Length: 400
Length: 100
Image (cartoon, rainbow over all chains, first blue to last red; front, side, top):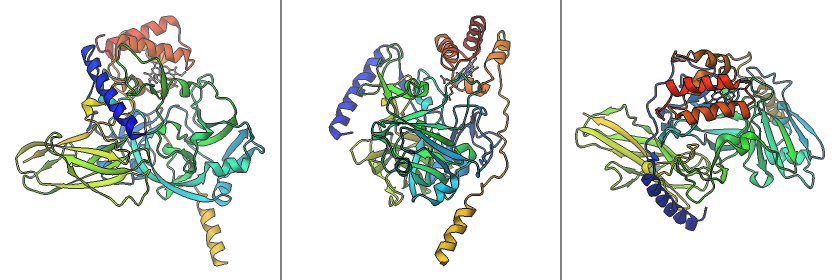
């Protein structure tokens, strides 16, 4: 987004918020925080916050976000279909490429690892509905806190290299991706994603490794699509089918789900939904504090090191600011060196010494190269799907 | 020569899965509010997803719940009769409603 657009956008957003206020209170606040992890842990995972077992929906607790790479066993999980394969025969597994190609491909894991250039990218995977519980009235969808995100180093093969091997026909335009998860009924539409060729740059990879290990089953073993900078709805897990077409297929999960109002502020009111919608695609600028948490108790006059993560769509984080006076004044946090690349979390830290007993709230705000910065939670405009919340984070600790 | 050897060993070892047997996704029992119409929920709503998936949407209006049941039938092809749809909508707005 151009800087100019951004200012226009924030003006429009401000207008929409006051308008909403005069109708029915559509408001936003801090997402739900501090939900307990469940007693039961899922395969290859530690105990995480658990919303559903079928399909599995697991969220990382706040403490996960004090490290820049999210450990595989703490990484969030979100499936759409209840029937997910619980076993993959690594010998038999194939990714089939067909449609408008010169040559159909059937790529084994062995081919993938031996016949193509191996590449890595560190990239944030975030559900578009992450932090949805911030929205009132309650937006439809899982009422996530802010832990439906994670950051990993993905290793695999460029999608472009696979498509090149197959050879795209002249009229090829859309690429459909399907994973191996299935609905309980045959008639239920599959969770197929479609991307336009223009959306596929060299950063898009078919990944088989996550932080130096096999992908966990629940994160899409043996291979998944990685689309740096975009929300996770198109990062198809257990990717087994790639179909090239010249026409956009009508797909439920493309045309109805994961869409936001197609206006400047991307906002609407509960009574008056904006008729035109667009896909969520690129992530907005966001930061999140991993330590301390809302349960932390600290001693007066002791140094605490606030740690967290910040990211955007790859434009590039340029700063994170910390406030301990409700946003009146801000101080620069120290950013890590950014060596993991522009699609990764930037870690930040900031030393803070409370000098008064009682509750103190610590806020974090990220800013990127385009001059975009996080709004206060209350200024994030409402949308009916509860997507793209990126309000300034706030953690309240007890000083004794 | 040495390098090639090393490469092929790596390639082979990476073909073994970390987990060599089927994984088992645990079952979780969700707290469910008992009441009129629960039978219809049990019969119609738990084949494709867990109860947690339904109730973790938060407290919602009757219109929201009605809309969801319609969506299940229209978009996801759930075989639910009109009569049961009505009963499920009533149950959800009674026990997981927001008073609207």
